[in-house]
Length: 214
Length: 214
Image (cartoon, rainbow over all chains, first blue to last red):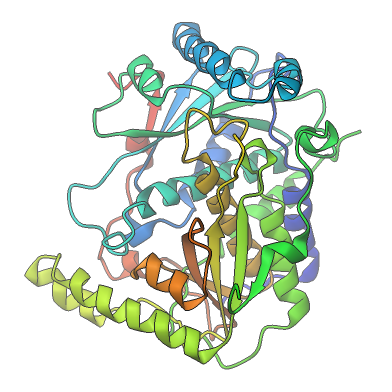
């Protein structure tokens, strides 16, 4: 018989999803994450679906300050460029936001996609499927961390090639995510970009379509 | 105070991840999924992280057989082409696999990425971040469905443009996933591609790197 879950268990999952947050450097505290919990987070990644069971992922655990500083430099470069993209009224709000926790988080994890040398079942038409598998693994890590009361923040304002250089990644690997991982003083109740009115919550009805857009 | 989860709750999450499977047409049974459970699956999607809180997702609920048949035609075309990509010994194994459940599943869900007209915070350097947000939502749906004892299968052997045509999707939308959703006769204990020796499980140690690849 297959495992049958009950409604209480489904409710636990809903709560873990509901209370998961993207965590930045103003929330991380200076407390090491025990190895056995890092292991649970990595195990969650390995339970993710992958196209053709290709498991096209690699995880670089980073606590070396020299590596972190190289990544932070890339963030600083790219963040300066990014600000200029927004309207002048939004630029002030942008500058006030803390958008990474590279140094503050005791652990960073670079998550890489490594393409297969052979054709992959399910990836022959949609070649992005391998990268999407890695993202499924990242979401599993994020949820597992939250269930262990550990925060994760995804830093995407950086140059992937600079991160690859910093960790000597193979040429054909691709950085999918750079994660900051650690204990927090608290998890915010809601996404900060919502409470600070950077972006409104979308109306659920407008996101759901029945059979055809028109 | 932030919500604190206990180890039993973390264990529930691990089990939902462990018993989640990719479900194909040979497992779906002819039993409608109640609307309130479809709603729980969609709510899980909306709890996913999204870059810059952009929520760049749309969900097309498909039960119209005319739409399903168009998608199945695209699968059949692409699957024929895909087989030829594999070595002759693998082609036999490939042909024996059931790789979709478009007709068998009572509900299909097309998950689309809709780019923002404005710059998106966090997406200025890594432009794929919007699509990756949609994949996080898909993984949330997959886990929530499993916790409700409902199966999901991700069909990626198809031409995204044909699916867009079938549901009259806007030009700038992009199909990220085509999901088949329904109750199942059973969930397999392990990924079918593992038990059928299509692909081996990778060694965990080889997937984890400390600070630098060399």
